[in-house]
Image 1: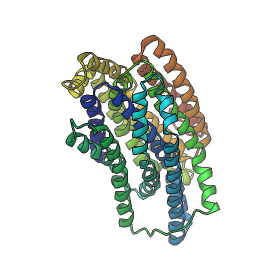
Image 2: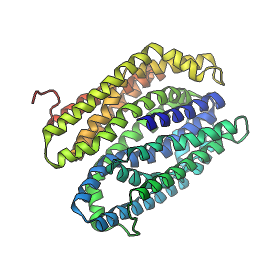
Image 3: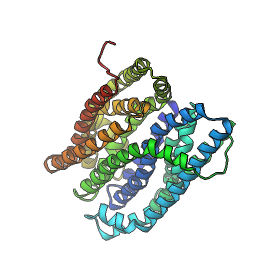
Image 4: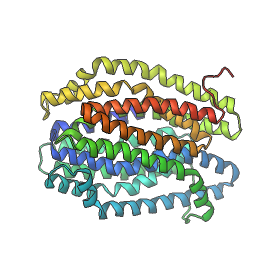
Length: 427
């Protein structure tokens, strides 16, 4: 968790530097919108598949010889890189359409900047896709520390470039390229980690058997995660928020990054490290042990997240002033960030519980239930966000996040009970 924490610090510093150095400008809006698009692709591939592929790798390693397993995983890695190349080309070709849609209420100059940023950042999708498979394999081998550097390297490299080139004319373009370079470095880092496991990479194309395994394993979770992430990150945080005028995307993102960093540090870290054990428990059809592991992970989340939530609620304005004051942002903008963070903080505990509860479903390969939950929450989130935006503006978007998180926790507990893992029973 220490490495993840360091990564979250780098990520937070990077996103703090955007408004501090670029202000609540259209350039900042365009850069943030671009990162949400390219990182959406990476996040969908990574989060939508890593929880489902880890159990698959554990199962295949147990049932195959060493050579067969290496050929199986290598073919999936090769396939993922080809998928990344295809997705990069899609972003490159449709960059103008993407920018015109998401920043429809911004100026022509802002949309043109986003097109440039998209084309500079698009190559990261290739290495992000490959890193997803490498990371999933290393997680299945319990090499969590190696994989955890994903949160540190891309934003860390971009942060260094941001600081070194502060005040230069093309700083935004340089930062976009630096972020993409960070993914290349991370891919190389994971490859080194793979070598250290004495794993033998084998150049082979994906077989129909492997494709069938991927289809059965990742299709539903990835589809659900795509719908959920597109709704939250693009339609709500860029398209809807962008309609509130120049700088709105930057202000909301400035508060949300703090909230998101905490969810990643607590919820996703605990879910990632706890998944292999829960998947092993399920492979032995030991529901009681799986339930005990899941409850232990949930208690760990509560022990950490509750005091963090109280600290955020009490100090949201001070945190905003400390991070974003004395920069290019006006005092009124800093105050708005503090207000948004206060509303987001209400849902911190629930947002941290979601990844752990989801891991309980992933461990059981209950992909249909995972898809159902993600689609339901995506629809509810958009509806609540749209209505709340009309009434409370940016604070309404934060309110929608809280309500959706609470509903997601309730729904996931219910879905887990349908699999035979009842969290509140005495058995």
